[in-house]
Image (cartoon, rainbow, N blue to C red; front, side, top):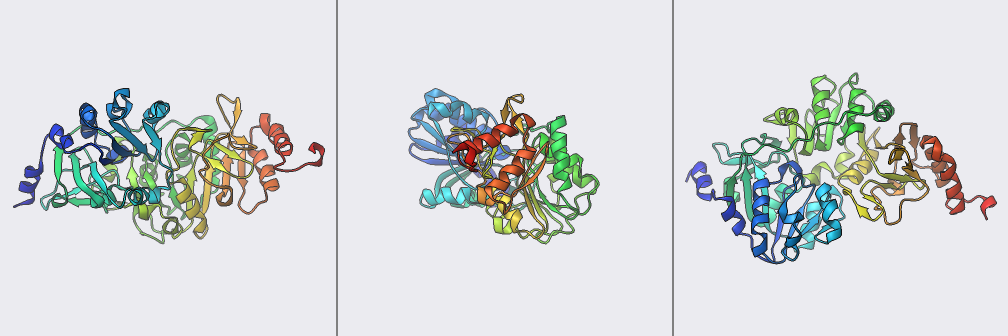
Length: 439
């Protein structure tokens, strides 16, 4: 049987594919741009026939009835590695729960907790080539691992997906069913940096040297950083998330990957998410490889890159140096993701640095993001013993190796002037940095 014949034999409708899911099963869903919208929409339509199904998701990009409809209570329960807007909305309704994780081990930890397997994996892939191989395209954080661990594999084939190289290939013989759903890809347009974000970007760019290997996130601050790197030389990419700004740096000749000590000559990522510009760039691009998250985000792998520079953002930083990037107090808003992985890994690198960049205030300047203590119940994304460099629009605080007292002084200097006295007074009052005048 030829590969095309095998593909056609396994090709079924969305309705038939989801009918294979049974009550009391676990279903792992590919993440972000790799999620299968047709299969998830059909899961919502069939959800009422199911009982006690648990889904594993990460950064869902679209609103789905399977997760949002209150009538799914008792039918589908979602366990999520990284919340998106929809998850935040339904968290209080009790049908979704956050899974604490570090990105490099998220999939393996979940399999460990589920006796080494998952009942069903649903994801996306490109159409097969003449040899029967399909590319998992935009995601390989845990997707390839789940294909190998799942008892039933269903892939949603979309001709709009870019063909990515690396460790993304899956043969049709390793898939149980395929469906076709040629829909537009999710677009995540770059945000235009604000003036404050440009100030932060300039401070961060001052810390990035020629030849450095970068990990960048997405949003106004990373976009601002990109603008200040256009005159750097021989930079490389080793990142969990491949974003549009990296395309701009490559096209400007800034990224060559020549100085990388690991995967030299290649831009390495675990998943990609952005605009059509990004998807066109990575399509059949031999200079880009999408590898498994357990490799890309392993701190000991990250640390083998020369001058590895990890740049992430946060919600709060306290004077101990604890970084919260995932919650507002007890309210979960996102997840740890790969922040801890790359922040730690960068500090293992020769000439490396872990940078947390954030605005000094939130809520229109009424709340300081540099605080004496994290909000009660806040998740600690980077613990105090792992923190390195904090940047706001007011400057740079290098905390690595400093005592709490010296950390407080360094952070006060980059806090908003309106809150500097408050931070010091609260630190003394609480006894975090004792002052005999308060006791």
